[in-house]
Amino acid sequence: MLKIAVGHSNDPESSEAIDEIIAQCQADLAGVQPQAGILWSAFDFDHELVLARINQVFPGIELIGGTTDGEISSVLGFQQDSLTLMLLCSEDIEIRAAIGRQVSEDPEGIAYQAAFEAQQLLKMAPQFCLAVSESLRTSAALTLKGLQSALGNVPVFGGATADQAKMEKTYQFIN
Image 1 (cartoon, helix red, strand yellow):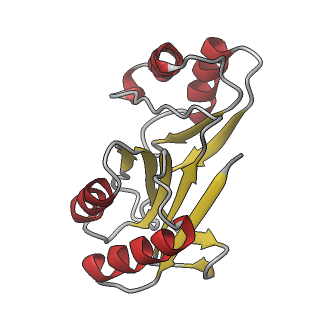
Image 2: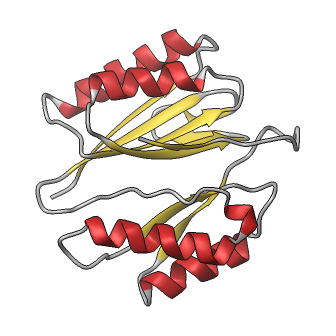
């Protein structure tokens, strides 16, 4: 069984937004400890503060995510300049995160290595992959090719991070 909790805030203050999201998620979780999470954030939030708070409240969580040009959830629908967190809990499903650094130097090879490393952490065969890729300096097609090469017939879902059309830099989050 998979339990999912979602928090979403459009408060412009990072500390207020993450506190609101955590309260929403904790109410949904009813004491269950999440195994993993996905964080989508507008570019201008204090990401270090947000990530530190998530890891303080949910230590050991496998967390991924990144900056976006718009966030959508079942809580607030589509928003811009917001913060949303989805937490996943299961006793039957294994979730692991890995990262590829300097992907623009070798998108295919580094994506392959990240997927390979994630698989080494699993006790079961992977069933699907969720990838959050850098979008400004690398090829999403080559990144996907590397993931598919490492994973075989495992479906790959995900997308690329954004910076609200500034075209300067994006952020990807892990743990």
